Length: 484
Image 1 (cartoon, one colour):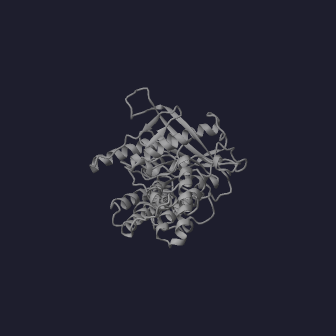
Image 2: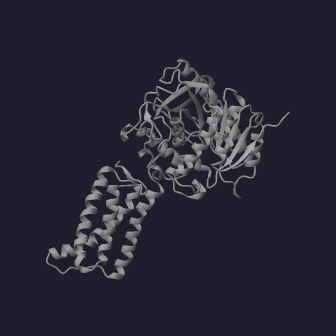
Image 3: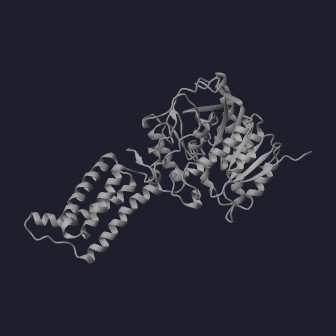
């Protein structure tokens, strides 16, 4: 696809098509002298650009524009054709042309509006000194049966995507990593599954497979920087490993290795290395008690996935598993992180496994059926708390943070909604209830900046006062450990 114009989220060809179609419709209302030239020029432009889009494969946002041009074309050309045939030129009466023109212009306006509301995501440029590389791996835990199937020989397998400091920066579009998958086919499968999971028509997310991030696939690891701290990430319920790509790339550019997981039978779609696709089996029942029990079970499975992934990364660092990151992973400095249900899983994994040095819960309701003390510091990022917020959310989260034996933090970011902390603002309609009221890229940037401040302080002992750094991004509540 041709490069999109920043802000408009349209290519030059699409912009030309919209302009030609609008001129074609508007020509009817021009004075006689310029009317003929404008109509012929606009008709030629609309036909040529429409044909070019048809060959390239038009986005669905352009279909109303092409339909409007097709409707207007006969009426714009009919007078000229009659004149060429030696007949008197006739135009549709104004009372018929006026509603027709209004309808066509409304269809034309729908195209740019839809392209702006549901664009191809443009990822923020990572601000750190490192270029970013990415690779996808698959791990099977021989000690864990897969409880989602009836096959007693089936073992738990997860797919992980790693973002890491690299020595080669992507420049050309073809060198940058595909969003949502290893290749266009996987990206299309995952995009369709996400739309289906959200109850949306598949075409609403068809821009996602067109997107490229800033990472270079399988780039050489940075030669400098020593051994990098590790950040494990679990996505939201039904979410996929790439849902926080902007955040992961920002962390990697600052010297962290981020390992984000697909959770089979939970994530909307997981494409395995052998080509099999595993769709989600999770579903709510509508009964609060049953759904809470299910959420606790899903959280426990995800927490076990995070712990298993940390073990695999440790083996990768030792060289037991081949890979370019051998000897470069400091798994003694590891954070469990996650969004939504993944945040609950990160909290549980940290409580169960002291190998995690810190935990970050990104707007996740805790689902620990047996809450206990945490040895690690915890950061909880929350959306703006309002009348529609679950009244149990903040008290439950507060109880969890008070269980930490280290100073922990709750940061409520103004102008945010639940999906603000993901990539969703980059490609979804900017509805405050859905993606918050911040600028499209401000949500992912704020999420990365706050988590970087926390990770630098807890994994790297950064000298900058953490409370000051976090307070710059929202309303901070500090939970200090209780003295015995």
